[in-house]
Image 1 (cartoon, one colour):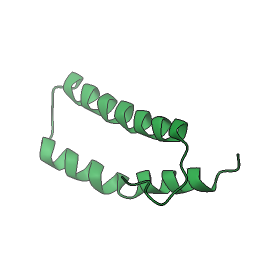
Image 2: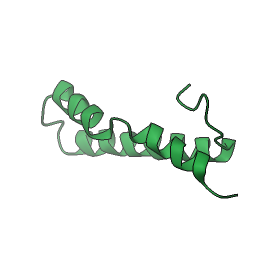
Image 3: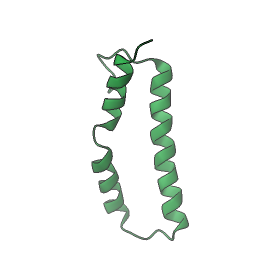
Length: 67
């Protein structure tokens, strides 16, 4: 949905999706392995804030990437 109006290759979409999926999965696994310290709501809020706009920025770069 975020790529509407942009010419983003399917392979780039997959790379972006996998990057965020693995990053978030890794953060969750790390949080669990360290004893689940910290408020999960706070952690989710911070992640959301820190990554705000980064997916769209990646899609825009894909749109402008030379073939």
